[in-house]
Length: 527
Ligand code: CU1
Image (tube, rainbow, N blue to C red; front, side):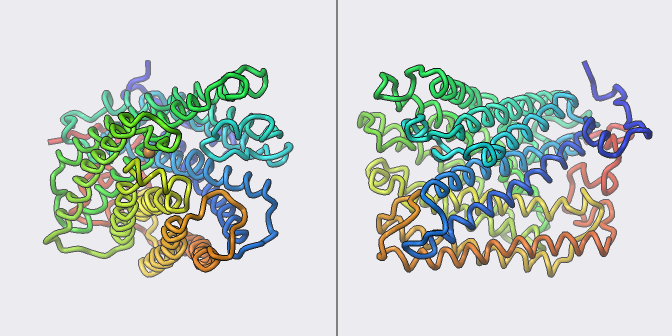
């Protein structure tokens, strides 16, 4: 059993760079592996989105066949959820949690490395399907009967089922690592209620992964068996139950939303106080509302299924639960605003992303409460209103938080300072682009445009055109981002141990930038 005091062998000098990278078990290299892979998958998923938006820019477009369109939106969603957002947040968690709790590494470094390589294998497996007969094409939530061979004749959905299984094993192993590390490796004096808020949210997230992932694993194994061995599981025509798939999927799928957003909440909770020059308002409220979200997150899954015809009692229960979960979420938003209130706010790049996050996430949260009404949801189900809603929550919410965290910890991780003006340009460029892309989707949804169609009648042309222009602006923001990064690595401005000053009180700011291999020569003591 490895403990924090046991020496971890250093990379031997005779190892080639590539081999020591492959066999590294250091949490910082693994964290960076996750983050860099996440960025690459983000680019792929973004490129897929751009192709979809070109196809939808005007009616009767023939850029993509209906088949190609199905594959691209399936892989766009799958990529953004499983191959970008999750690994990105797990990567930041890997890099930061040991530093923040005053440990030298995660508790199971080899398991940690295994998690990363399983995730990468899952991602590559799913992407290899593009070259091996056709990509998954039944949507990222893979409803029966769309997944059945009659509708999805290529092996795409088999690649999907196995790829999802691998990434699920990866994140479950990672979750165990986070839980055991956080519970056992904290520096002397760091009680649970002295842990940084990011660590708290990672802990709750890890429990969510642990309890949600098995449901998806069962689902994808059953799907694989049904597709390849003809077992009657989800296909009604052969005596299976398509609703069973939905229950198992969303019992994972809704907690997954919080798996993506709680670490984001954690990042925001670290950034806001530093740039408000005030301690966080209501630390305990943020901790306990995070735990409440964790529990409630498991009680709302069937709000994705109002249209399947559940009993009125079930509809009512899941409607009310879904509205209740807005309460702990609003508590956090209240706490962040109260932290900023009366502070001397510095609008540095991380802070801009954090404020952008609060603004966009709140819009997504409000449309979420609208959709939580079973009666309203039946009308809006599978329209662009839903697409707008979850993109505001995730692709704007979680992504903005990730960029807040990115700019906040970039100086710590690389040792270099980015250029503030360029960073702000990146923020505003993205902010304008994504709002032009996603806000019109509310109108399209209210007008009744269904999602996942490769074409539409002329009546929907106006807002679709606007949305596609927005997608191009948001797409070019990636170039601005690359410029910011390139500039920082060329200019090599030294960031110092703590570029943010007195407000940055968590332990990672007490070590050098980038942090030493084993983080701490002596375990820190917390007063
Ligand atoms: Cu949900």
